[in-house]
Amino acid sequence: MMLAASRESYAAAVDALNEHAAGATPERLAATGDEVLAVADLLRREPRLRRALADASRDTDERAGLLGAVFAGKIGDDALGLLTALVRGRWSSPVELLDAVERIGAEALLAGSERADELGEVEDELFRFGGVVRGNPQLAGALSDSTAGLDRRTQLVDDLLGSKVKPVSLRLAALALRGFGGRGFDASLSRLVELAAARRDRQVAYVTTAAPLSDAEEERLAGRLSELYGRQISLKVDVDPSVVGGVRVRVGSDLYDGTVSRRLAETRKALAG
Image 1 (cartoon, helix red, strand yellow):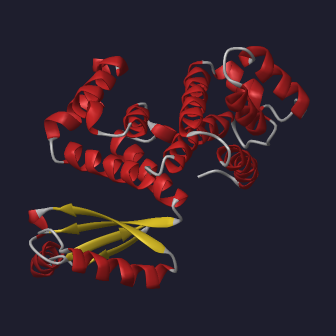
Image 2 (tube, helix red, strand yellow; image 1 turned 180 degrees about the vertical axis):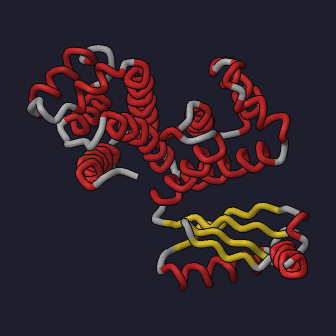
Image 3 (cartoon, one colour; image 1 turned 90 degrees about the vertical axis):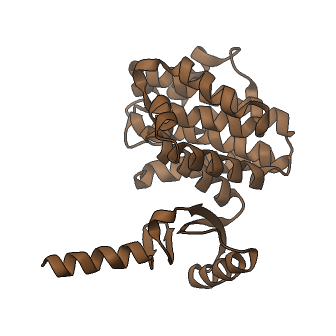
């Protein structure tokens, strides 16, 4: 989680992105996001440049000038403008600047899907892919195997998803492979799902049940959670027969576990005691 100074700097860049997104085409935003993420990859490989761009002992014009000297003419003006807004901010550490660059790149891709009226589909596609991976240990192992090389694993994701998902979903799945914000693959996908939901002013509720919920049951559950949290809820339902019955719901750090498997586990623990 970003510290206060970094959060303020990131918020200013988000404002710049939203202002830009209001008049940009989906294709232009996607290109901007790709360029910003390419810069994030470079900053990850070049810690000296990362430190220099986050160095609070340099004034803002000096940091912005360094950014321009390195990237002007190599990326578009839109991407350079977003990066300049970030570099002119105050950062608690170079790693937080890197995380911010990566996140604003992802947000630009999501803003493009929003302009194309595809944001909800992207959110669902990322969640479903995460479920497929979690349900297939062999696939999960292949995608997490750093010895296989990133290019090989990215090609595997492309082979699996290809034309089956929106282009932005494919880009974000590849970003998750790189470890979005330093997370593992599954956690990266979940975080990207949450960012997509946040752009729709929704909070994600992860629901686990032994059997699929009916449309009416999903609607009732989403309504109750919306009342509880005071905002619209995006339900993400996993079916896991091992929970036996009942429902487990996680919203942020809140966990509500009413599954039969949890009650059985508590009973076994009590009997063992």
